[in-house]
Length: 278
Ligand code: MF3
Ligand code: CO
Image (spheres, rainbow, N blue to C red):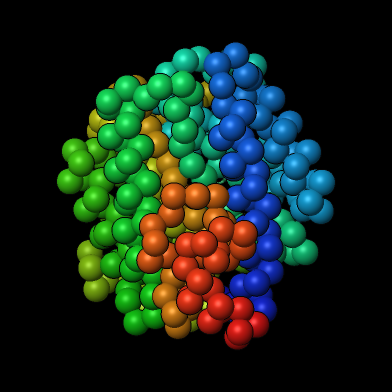
């Protein structure tokens, strides 16, 4: 069952999302050569708690950290450890925050230092796939419209979506219905309705789509060892269109409605319409 949220509840998720976004921007700045992923985890936990939030991942099915930090062929769920970031690493960072009983979840991929041409193409395609998916998150569309848009962008670039990992509804719980595959058919699946809140998250391998689980039973690697990227936003389906609740992306497309600090600069009209309803 897909739980729809009221505008007031969406605003609560947006408040959690503001902390997620701030945290991701901060971690992106700290992702430099010589920094341990454990250090990033500590920075994140401190920031989240200073804002009155709780790291939503910590303790989730026994997960031991506040963030996921997944370098290179690690796709997702890298447990922060003593790994020292090196020049050229492609690092995916995933953050979830619970605030006042509501959860927001987002991720981005950065390069430590200068990106290789392949890393740049992979990151650009995965981020673009996220926004193609988000653009479909409007009332009357179907879930498959999101999935298909993501898959199409990724495959046109010559890369592969991971099939065994999906996006998800989010709200009171980190993983709610529906599951959101990053592949599918337009017009298929449940109809999207106002008040649905979706964590849309393309996970992409530069090589084949197969993945394998690490020895810690969390880490997910590309099976062929190819580079991977991951971008995620928590998005509300509203009458005015998709509303991004985790505005970490200061280069978000102009058409996008977002909440929070970046909002007015990006799309004044849509944001004030949202603010008036609340
Ligand atoms: N963003 C990830 C997800 O949606 C975060 C899960 S990490 C976990 O699945 F440790 F909390 F499971
Ligand atoms: Co997620």
